[in-house]
Image (spheres, helix red, strand yellow):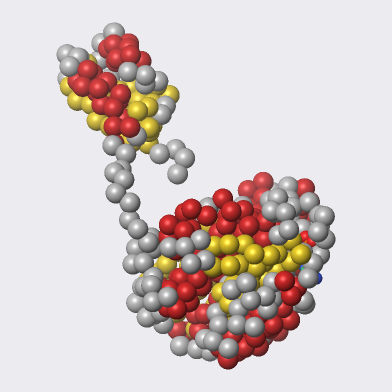
Amino acid sequence: MLTTVGLLGFGNVGSGVAKLIKTEGGLIADKLGWPLKLAKCLVRDLNAARGFEPEPGLLTTDPSEVVGNPEVQVVCELIGGVEPAKTLILRALEAGQHVVTANKALLATHGLEIFRKASEVNRDVMFEAAVAGAIPVIRTLKEGLTANRIQALYGILNGTTNHIITRMSKDALTFAEALAEAQAAGFAEADPTADVEGHDAAHKLVLLSALAYGVLPKLDDIHVEGITKLDPIDFAFAAEFGYVIKLLATASLHNGQGPLEVRLHPTMLPAGHLLSGVNGVMNAITIRGHASGDIFLSGPGAGMMPTASSVVGDIIEVARTHQSLESSLRPPILGWRKLKSDSVMPMSEALLGYYLRLTVLDRPGVLSAISGILGAHNISIAQVIQRGQNNLTGWVDLVMLTHKALEKDLQKALVATRELEAVREARLIRVEESL
Ligand SMILES: NC(=O)c1ccc[n+]([C@@H]2O[C@H](COP(=O)([O-])OP(=O)(O)OC[C@H]3O[C@@H](n4cnc5c(N)ncnc54)[C@H](OP(=O)(O)O)[C@@H]3O)[C@@H](O)[C@H]2O)c1
């Protein structure tokens, strides 16, 4: 069995999708039970430079080689904008193809027509990548939280504006300075209007509202306010009051009952709030279910591979549900077709940093004896603190942070250290610097 995929667009996201399908073919087949095959990809310019080199003959400028091509089962729309994306999606559905798209602008404005057509022809339209890039928020709302009445959802849905706001807040840059810097670093488009005026985040908010409340609000009904009028002094005053400013998207039931309240604007949040710590280009969403309580999701909201991760996840899901049914192969319970019998790595091979607290006699030569033992076991010390002198007992705490070392070396060194007469106790806590 095989699932054949056609792409409409081979730009930033399209290249990432092609790369994942090509380089992770084995992994995908292990989970799905059969491979994905990229059949054809529609572009405008066959000779343009690509983020991932396509196989010869893969690109085409003829939409009918993807849409309506009986060899293509799943059509991925990664062109963006309204036309020709909308017409091609509707045509693909009519032709019996399933659709995966990352196009929030299209779904927020013409979603009803597209979703109606999909129901009419009994085909899927999946759009995990359209909201918050790699974060599986659509699936969480649609599947994991189905049994909940959603009381509120609020989040940071645009990485460009969050990056700008972070720089304004932490380094007192003006909006113009932070925007220019973001553009130079590739985090903002040459024309940043859709991001900084809040339109992009508003598109995502419309889709989240539909999933959470069954209402696809009209964009014109939503209060949308961007970040262009924010001044560094507002961030400074906010901090003095214990707040952080974020461009916050909110959908909730007013007073917990209704009507639906949907808005997007700069908002002061308490500095200790989880969303206040989400900085740079990261996105994050809190969903409050009446039964689940608060669920917090955070991750990269854009970029070639994070977005491709969601698109390919959707393709696999479509293949799994539809082809599994057709072939009476049940979707695998653990997500993998076959479980491997590989054993896990023994703890002794773990490479970690360590905090060591040794209770030692406060006398000359003890530190050098301990560091000699550590050195002999390939453990290097990053920092040492000796806390005070205990004149009554003569015992003091000697605290060390080590650089990364093998657990088996550390355990051997601890055994040797405990044998020293000047050491009464040796405790350790493992340190993760890079999580
Ligand atoms: N970039 C992100 O991080 C990100 C994140 C989340 C969602 N998205 C969404 O993903 C979609 C794609 O974004 P992107 O950044 O990949 O865009 P992009 O880099 O501009 O790529 C667009 C692709 O579509 C092709 N295309 C454009 N107009 C066409 C037409 N009329 N006929 C045929 N092909 C056409 C282009 O062909 P040529 O290459 O030949 O010009 C290009 O390959 C958008 O809906 C966007 O909102 C993007």
